Amino acid sequence: MKDNYSYSKENNWDNTPVKLTLPAGVYIFVAKAAPCAKGQSYDVFTIGISGISSTRTQTSHLINFGNGFYPILKSVCVETVAAGTYGVAFWSSHNRNVNAIELQAIRIK
Image (cartoon, rainbow, N blue to C red; front, side):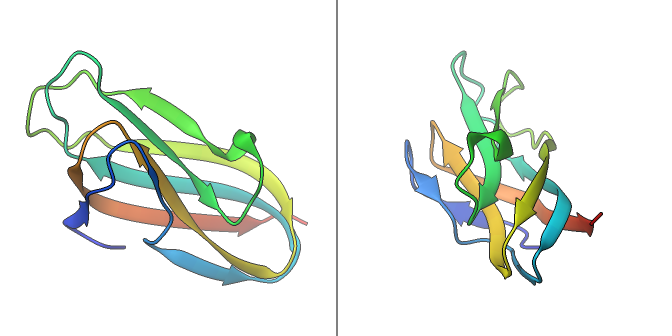
């Protein structure tokens, strides 16, 4: 986890925070993050899993909270993956700080 992660890539992907190295298998991935809301009507934040080439790993949120709030957002997916390193990925409509970043990978097969 990284608290107060400074996310400054507006309208672009950031694949750097919180990574796990896993053996091959089938996993339930749960990615969580609490981005700072900007209090604007069109405030999009997408959270997903880096290292997997599938849009199934991505969940987009319209953040309609007031400015300065940190809503907890998550993306959940089941994926078959090769051995490798996987992490949390962000796409944001605004520069922002992100707290409480977490990635869980539960092996089911």
